[in-house]
Image (tube, rainbow, N blue to C red; front, top):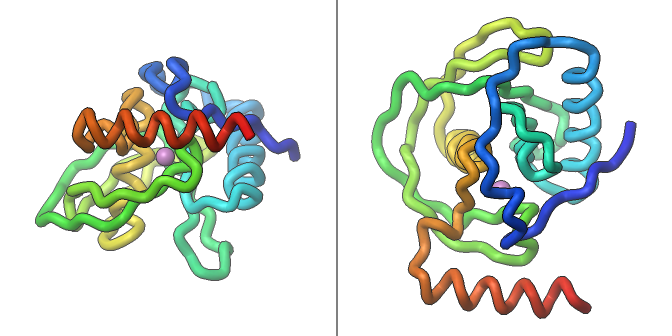
Length: 165
Ligand code: NI
């Protein structure tokens, strides 16, 4: 397993729209293994392939306390959504930045696992937020896009300073 380099905001590559996975081969398995290793090491609870400069619709998530419930989400679609919630979100591409974002409360997700098997999953709370946040990455969207221009500029300056040190 290898640790992958995570792109930081405002890297323009984070704005790439990811492509559907059609060929479920060993490279997909290897990539998800490396994404989990990278995500756990960071440490983080979710990682989109976009963040490691691979522009395919692949996400790894583990919101469990014990970090023993790895979830691979490939070609995700939200088929049902309900309610509203806003919790502080963070992102491995924006280290140290936390802001609340309005999201759906409950969602039903349809996706494929690393072998290409389809599954459906009902999620609420943190898992629901995490799935929605990571799915945004696949569209080239970041959680700071929901904030005001002024706030985003302040974050950009703060990160530029922090990442230079
Ligand atoms: Ni993120």
